[in-house]
Length: 267
Ligand SMILES: [Cu+2]
Figure 1 (tube, helix red, strand yellow):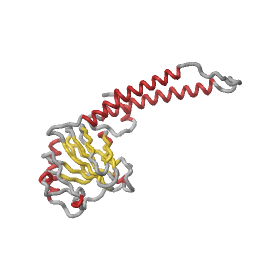
Figure 2: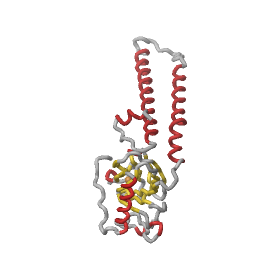
Figure 3: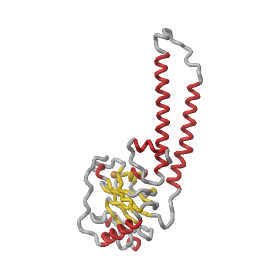
């Protein structure tokens, strides 16, 4: 789609996901619509100031406007808004929440927010997440993963580090350990509140390799701005290599906790 060209040149984070262009074109369409409304109503306002100035109308007119044009214009705006909502916004939203990808190529992971870091748990080749238990939570095991659960044997956990292969669908189960956070990857055009006690899935397909910011988009405390992680989108082979290396690290955890990210100016 070529409609979403302006919005990137205006400084929005470049899109790197398959569905992102639909959201960008929607955003751009809305901006053009706003511009038309702004110019339209702005000129009407200027016209009324000039047309009904006291000098030209020394006596008040008790009849008022008799033209039905404003009503028709308002009706037109209403129709356009219904079209925007039903023809564009609703289908895009339905695609995001109803049509989750399935199959062996789908990557399943959990993103668990806590003050102030993102923890990740990859289900591994079996597609099943190992059991978590709050009693097992420690600085080296922030997720409280039960390493005795067979489903956990092929799981990989990371702190602030998220890797994905390019062109493969990913489903992220968004969760929180403490307060409400918001799992947001601006370049992937996804954001989802992380609500304690719930697991809310989102999905996307990264289509460009590179590194991207994963941020918390919900003010969650005084360390909110430091709550960022890094997403690396890489080739399938590089991803497999990373997964194997990281799973070895998880098998032999180091005693010292991973360093917490330093504050940035991003948020
Ligand atoms: Cu947060």
